Length: 437
Image 1 (tube, one colour):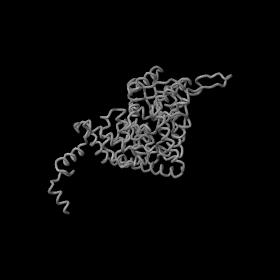
Image 2 (cartoon, helix red, strand yellow):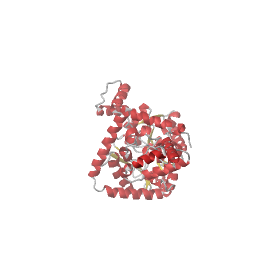
Image 3 (spheres, helix red, strand yellow):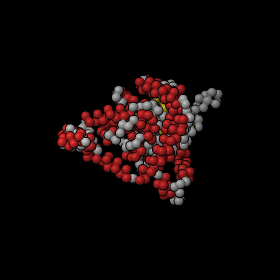
Image 4 (tube, one colour):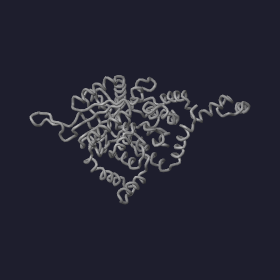
């Protein structure tokens, strides 16, 4: 059995601290309560949601089953449009390639849109080590970058930070006294600080919500407008995303585009949906195509494997690859709502994050997180793809146990049963007294 001091005890200490952290409890309660209510209200207004859910699952299932062929098609089409395609087999290769592109363009400043894949591969650290300044532009990511923290949530990366602490942070940076109850004023600070960075950036890096094989299109969904600046203003745009984000057509992508907002943010539709199909171009002078026009001159599409194909090929866990990163399972989870993704997650959070961690970062990294799930099933009900997370957690725990990862409370109960035929370690005589009672 693996020594608990190596994997369990440090995590338990983090959980204990989180449960005693009143600021964390307040912030997570505010966020999850607001978002679950917003999602419920949005779904009431969308009678066709069952149809969209059914279609989305069919699309994701077919796309995952045919992922290699779709990736090949995407490569051919984006290259035909003048883009550059790269398939990275793991995190190291992906980091090295993105860094090389930035260095080849002598980039000094990179602006970034929110991207869980970039968090997965520790891209910011790699760029910084090469002497390249990285500026997160999503408001939540901007806040946690200033605090040198990791994201707490796939949609709300700074949800663990109450507005009072954000006001204090921004006040310290600007030298102004910013009241915590004036959230629009706090938001305007970030807008003011980031506006010049968008203009100065040498490279913009984004993720993708969906990519389409048939047209070589990158689909990005947002509310803030920062992604449009990141992908449109710099001379070079690099998109880094996972191979599982691919679907066959724009029609298929439209289903995900409609399904994601109500489950992610409680909106009927997000403010901005961008479809990027190659570098910017114009044909206004005698129909001669010229690249670029007003947007980036170069577009790099980097698709990452990093354990995804192994996930897809594993019948016990393949369903996890259907995830569209809406975060709905986190918002409803009774465990997440107490400790947040700051504690419950390596890079990906919650129970679904434990599964992704096992394949992207190694099963040893997933060990402490897998044993936090209560298997209550709320996540499966909340998930728009109806992903059976509890069953996958059971299977992950089985594999972990076979490798010697046994949570101390479980080992204690097992020992009591073996010794005394009951989980409490009571003598048989005591059990007889219970039966008589």
